[in-house]
Length: 385
Image (cartoon, rainbow, N blue to C red; front, side, top):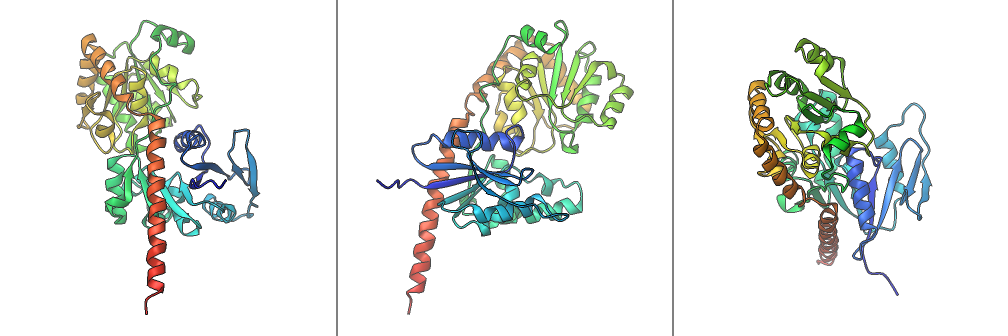
C-alpha cells in the first residue's frame, strides 16, 4: 500500500550542542515519530565531508560522501554540492536562514526556518552584512518561512519584502532538562557557595549581549555586594579587565565551554537570571531560566517581551543603575522573587518542542498545498491559446 504522507527532508548542518542544532535535532527527532509525515534528518557533515541520513538513530546511513575542494572550500559551497544528493522529497526544510540561498537548488517545495537576521540588523562589518545578505537571499524564494518570533517575522518582511502570509510564527520549545531542582544540591554538584546570592548570565560575548552593562549593573547593585555573578560563555580579555576595574573581579566567575548536560544545574543554582541583550531572534536562555524556576530580568526589546510575557521584569533603559535597582528589588524581596518564579514556570510550560513540531507539520501542509497550486497555475498557463 502506497504511503501518501508527504516526504520531508529536514536539512541541518549544526551539531546537537549548538543553538541552531538544538532546534533541528529536537524537531527531527519528534517528526520521525509523526504519523502525518515521513521525515528524514539530513545532516550535512562539513568536517567529515559526508551527508548522513537520520544521524544518531538505528536507521543512520551515509547518503553520500562529498569531496572537499582544496584551498577553496567553504560551508556554503559544501552545502550546494551536498544538495545534489538530496532527492525524492516533497518538501525540503532548511533549518536555518543561512541555507536559504539553496532554495533554488532544492527540487521540491521549500520551507526555511529563520531564527534571526542579527547580522543584517547589527552587522560586525560590511563584509558580514554582504555575505549574510547573500546567504539569506533565498528567503525571498522560499515556499514557506517559519519565523521563531513575531519580531523575526517583522524583520524578514521589512528587510526582504516577503508578504506576511508566507511567514508563520512557530516558537521554540524548552528541553525537559530545564526544570526546578533543589538549589542546595545543584550548588554542591557545581562547587558553588551555598550561602551567597548568585546572579547568572548565559550567552555569547557579542556586543549586542551587553555584557559590560551587566558587569556595571552588578557592581552598582547594593544586593550584590557579597553576591557571585556566574557568566557562562566566551570570556574575552576586555570583559575580565572591566570586572577588575569595577572592583568585582573576585565576585565574577567566568565559565567557558560548560557541557550542555551541566548547564541546567546552573539555572537551578541561581537566585536571579539577568539578560540585557539588545536584540534577540527569540531569547532561549531567559526562557530556560524561567522553566528552571529562576526569576528573570531582561531587556525590553525585539522578541524578548513576546516570549517573556508578564513573567519577567523588562527593562528598557541602558543605564546600569536602572538595572541595578531592578536587581535590588528582586533579590531584596522574597515575595517578589517567589512570585516571578511561579509566573515564569507557568509561562515556560507553554513552550514545548512537541508544540513546535505540531505547528511545523501544519506549515508542511501549507507548503504542499502551495506547490500544488503552483503546478495547476503553470499547467493552466501552458494550455492557453
